[in-house]
Length: 211
View 1 (spheres, rainbow, N blue to C red):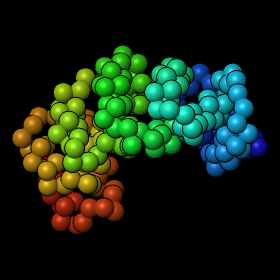
View 2: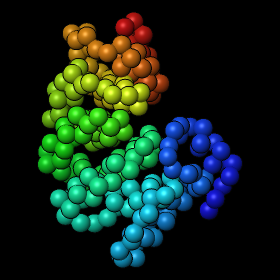
View 3: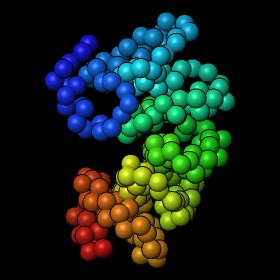
View 4: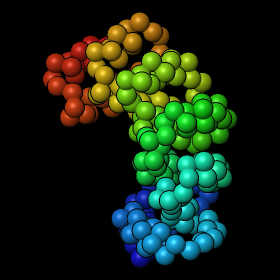
């Protein structure tokens, strides 16, 4: 499955990682994940290669088991994440969390307090993928206002979360940013990301530019 041209491209966008990148496109890794899940057998991941760590995460996301068992699998997996691409691909596949959002939320709070940059990013990306709704809106505002970000990729996830809040709760989020002093980076990057969204109309984007 190796694609050397894709590997060279992916090396440039992933950034620093301790894993060797082979160069396999994500759709092929997803196909392989589905195949392994259908075989329903115990699989040992050695986690030497970037693609193997990614496959491992997608396998966990798709594995059918009680949710408390899934949480244990996630806890064991998180220390393996050392880049944004594996983090975000893993989170976007963890659709089960939406069904168990209240049960899982204490774990999110724990991960937000992590000193590990990519575990903290994991928590923020879970929030923007699975928790943007009426029930958690005020909690998300509190987190953006109070969070102590511990690295560039955590900051970028915080900005990404703010941009999503503008997309789905524009009026409420506009009031929030006017009433609170936010991290400069989060504010500027969050607005920039929101301006790229097709969900906002021209008038809303004009308001954002004025900020």
